[in-house]
Length: 355
Ligand code: NAD
Image (tube, rainbow, N blue to C red):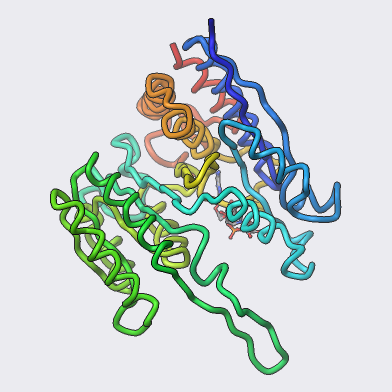
């Protein structure tokens, strides 16, 4: 009998609905090829939720996500909601969702496809063969730290990490490294920040339990430079919420477009799978967004949440083959393209390659 998985679907705002549609198309195809079914439970978050319910993270979404095997998410945000009070803005809804789901580990692979080595702004010899996994702490640090306040003559946020928060994310990074090239580079700002020295000391302690993995430490300003200078030196980058947010966007440009990079957020229970980019309001509604980051996120969901390794590989292989055969969306269209696709056409191409 074929298996049925319950997938929470959050389309969000801007290009979110467009790219999620393509990912669902691909999931349905891989489901029919690999004899499994997906039941989709659509939920609201961000601007779409504000418009429908008045809040960015409605109760129905809160209860809905825990009833799913995994959640696939597009993106939220847009200028329409930018003037709202911070706690009512779409981004607050997303932070609250991540916190509610306990998805403290954000895995962001930055891989350069051979077919796209010319798509990066960096030289091909610098980026060819890059395969980095950024492990970003997602539910702590300065994005969540209390107190925080905006006053008339000053404003402040708090960067705080507990021992438990650092230990659990460090363990995930070391476990992932064990299945890769066995190297973890922990990125912090320990020369200036107490919270970073604390992070470094705990990571060093945790490393003793993984003698087969080599640990190095790097300051975040140097890491930003090294990512551009010689990205191949990295295997797993372990870092905090704020630094990971910035470094993973920088790493995305190694691959040629932010529209290519997926992510998996895992932790206590149900995982959240989403592209690393935002809602791209500048191209929303035009049908030209690159859906590959979201389709890759669906592949990560199959692998990490559902343990459907073969189905996940079929999607990854279909993406590689499509790029090899010259199919490109506009963001990567200038590089060895044979056929320029819109968002929906790219989804169809990936579907057609899944056998
Ligand atoms: P963005 O990632 O949305 O866009 C940055 C640039 O990349 C834009 O030029 C955009 O057109 C392009 N881009 C992004 N995704 C693309 C894709 N799939 N295909 C082709 N081009 C793509 O970042 P931004 O412009 O700084 O933010 C826009 C909105 O998104 C803001 O409201 C922001 O708060 C929100 N945001 C949401 C998330 C999320 O939902 N996880 C993440 C980042 C930003």
